[in-house]
Image 1: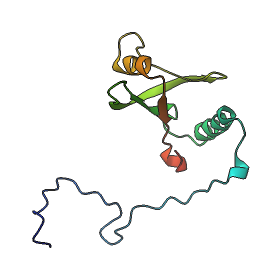
Image 2: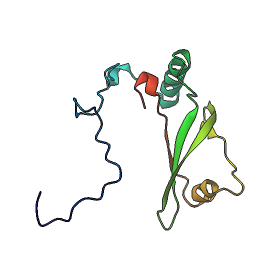
Image 3: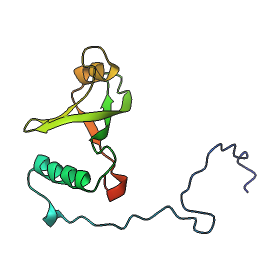
Image 4: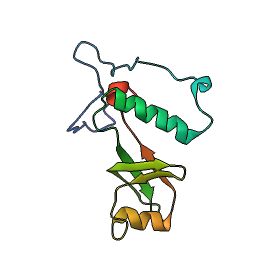
Amino acid sequence: MSTSQPPSNKRIFAPGGTDTVPQAEQYTKGSLDASQLSHDPLAQFHTWFEHARSASVHQPETVTLSTAALPSGRVSARMVYMKELDDRGFVVYSNWGTSRKAADVRSNPQAALTFWWHELERQ
């Protein structure tokens, strides 16, 4: 240990792996090549969502919605449910009248959705 740095007071250290294998779990169920993708991102998502449903992914409609309020740039993320997907894009359940995410989106309409389907090793 270097004497130039104070000792660590880590409360949680999660490097992944196990006592015998210090490496994080490697996901190996599949790969993705550009030639496999639809030119329409909404059609591609629909295909993936149906795959998640048919593979019995637990609540595949659960998604992280990330926003950034302007002018502060304060980032916020929260779990929501996707309500539907249509030609305009994604619709999520929210209180769009009074919630913080609604205020964020009013100030900055750019947002990000992240789906995590552990059973498929896909996000």
